[in-house]
Image (cartoon, rainbow, N blue to C red; front, side, top):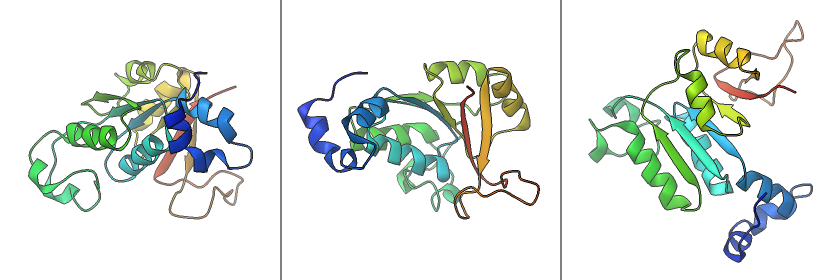
Length: 178
């Protein structure tokens, strides 16, 4: 894990006060690499919060162009970007927020055919976040040794359903299986 500069200590001071996190937790976060598929509504907010918190590397995968109907939920976009590719606006905002975060932009959506390559861009395969992913991509991730867990972010923290299964929802998290 890389050391924190005096500037980083000053920026992340508040979160390093959290019990159980400290400077070791911040160094671990700085060394983390996260792939986020679909950085529109939920994914864009997650990317923004991770950049603010000091994650080391963000790999963002999303295709398409900005549409007027995106503006109410894609909070990192703006009216003057309508018709332009979606990712450059997001990357610019994240780099303005935290120039210490490495941002890798991949202008395509995740599907089974590119899932392995995109997860590989996240180096350590520590975490893959995706608000929406097709079943085929989930199967591919599972074969790569990445566990799939869903969490409904509109409700309380993850609760078991009537059969002991986690409730399905829009918020999803993939993490390395042990």
